[in-house]
Image (cartoon, rainbow, N blue to C red; front, side, top):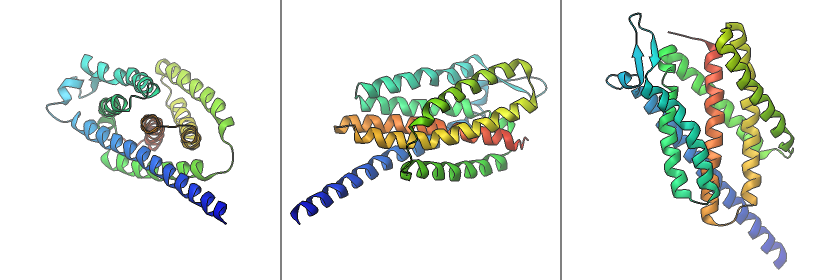
Length: 240
C-alpha cells in the first residue's frame, strides 16, 4: 500500500513538473509572438517605415540596408540562442530570444504591406487553432513520431531549395504549391517538436537546464507557427 502511494505521488509530481515546463514553453512562445506582432505593425508606420523600407514613386516598398540587416540577423540569433542553451545560460538565451522576436517582427512587417488586415487576422486565428490541435496531438499521442524527424528535415531542405529556385522562376502556381507543401511540413514539425520536447524534458535535470530547454522549445515552436501562418497567408492570397 505504501509503495502504491509513493508511486502515485511520484507520478503526480512528474505530471505537475512537465505541465509547468510546457506552460513555460508556451508562455515564452506567446510572448515572442506578441513582441513580433507589435514590432511588425510599428515597422510599417511612420516614422519607422523609412528606416526599414524604401518606397519608390509607384508606392512599391523594398527593404533598406537596415531592413536587410534586420531580416538576416535572426539567423545568427537562432544559433546564439541554441549555443547559450547548451551552456545552460538561460538568462542569456532568454534575452536573445526577445531580441530575436523583435527582429523577426521586422522580417514579418511586409505582410502589413502585402495583405489586408482582415486576411492577417483570419489567417492568424486559423493558424493558432491548427497549431494548438497539432501540438496537443504531439503531446498526447502514444505513437512515436521520431521517425518523422528525418523525413520532415529532408522535406524542409527541399522546400528551401525550391523557394530559392522560384526567386528566379517567379511562378505563381509553383509558389502556391510550395506554400501548400510548407503547411504540411510545418504542421508535421509542430507535432514532432512538441513530442521531442516532452522526451527531452524527461532526460533534462537541473532548474537552469530546464529553463534553457524551455527557451529552445519556445524558439522551435515559434518558428513552426510563424512558417505555418505565413504559408497559409500566402495561400489565402487576400492582398490589399
